Length: 212
Image 1 (cartoon, rainbow, N blue to C red):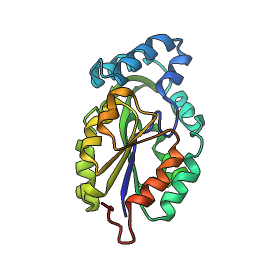
Image 2 (image 1 turned 120 degrees about the vertical axis):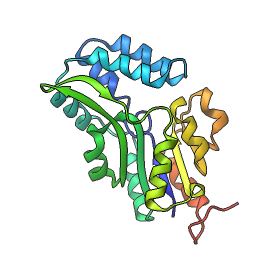
Image 3 (image 1 turned 90 degrees about the vertical axis):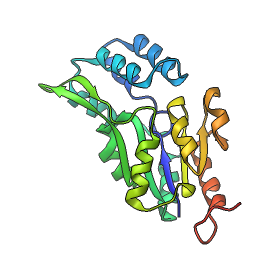
């Protein structure tokens, strides 16, 4: 069986921070920083810090409520159900936030969620505790040590430049509507998350090993 790792924003749900930005009327500013980050024009940590500074003062309960109400992309629920039926281990390693963790585990059967955390002061967002930056491969290494799976059995699904490091570390890299900047680092390109199922099936033979 495989370990299948997913990004969150742009892969499972739409971008989260822009939804929060709407509530404080900072959509344009957050969007500009997000775009720079996705294109690799700004350091991930710097970009995230800047975006969270624009959201400073927003209620953490409101942020959690937004996370709970965001719709999954078409095909997400059925895709994860099929992957769980095949006994694959599923993980999300994301620069997004842990306010999604409980929901992802309950709805989609995701085994591991590694994400950033809001720093909260008196019930309001004040800063960010950056756990996941553009070096997601560090968290993959720790996870593999924990679950005893070799890198060659890892399939990574992502869409942005902060996935490049983990794409390089995975046994197989899949870009979902990938940015041009990451195309040299992926093995397959898909337009819907539903397309991951036949890829996983093809890569795994009856012994749970990758085919040549």
